[in-house]
Image (cartoon, rainbow, N blue to C red; front, side):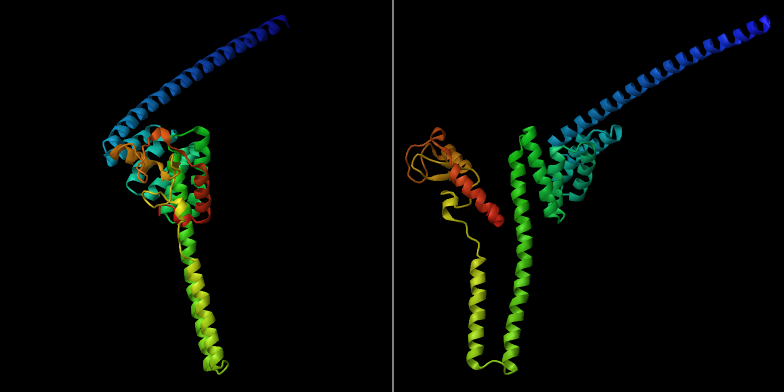
Length: 303
């Protein structure tokens, strides 16, 4: 019995020792695999960055196709960096290949849903692809994120938002004109039909025609687009974006007044009184009025 017990203990001890070596060997193998995977990932990232830098250089030189090729190679090397997709999308944007822009930035947003550029580019692409409402949503998201991350191109996003609102308004206005024209034809034909059927006397007919003309003349006048003079720059007579006020109380578009100072000297364009950049201040009241006017009249942007 003792021998039997002793012989059974030895194999058991050997089994545990063997299992321990197996665990150690497995852990060592896994560690080596992890190291290899990490090194391989780093090589891929380094290679991708090399291609990205070449793409950036090509883009600066205006070689868009070359830049696209390099950014594509960067993506092939390391497809997990969303910036490679937004870089390539910018090239497509320059080429006005809007579907390609949309495709790339959608991938970028899957990798980083808070990418300002991806939302910005997608908004622009959707507008050009005939989806201004969806484009406006993306641009609005881009603006919200840009305010959080303090990106330097927030004014560009603002401009695109105004363009999107204008595109939406123009689309709706075109539909309204079509419906109005159809309704106008209907009223006209109804009056004529009633006259031919003897349902209207001559006086009744004349009255209906007069009402018809007055109504649609009023509608046409109401649809006329006019920007109030006090919202327009004194130099360009166009709607202002960044109004500033001079010591004389005249409001100008900042960029145009700065250009005037640079080209013509430090004096006011209208009064000819001495004036420089240090004498002008933002006209917040007019800016607020402009923003409200644009909100109610999106067509006026860039008019």
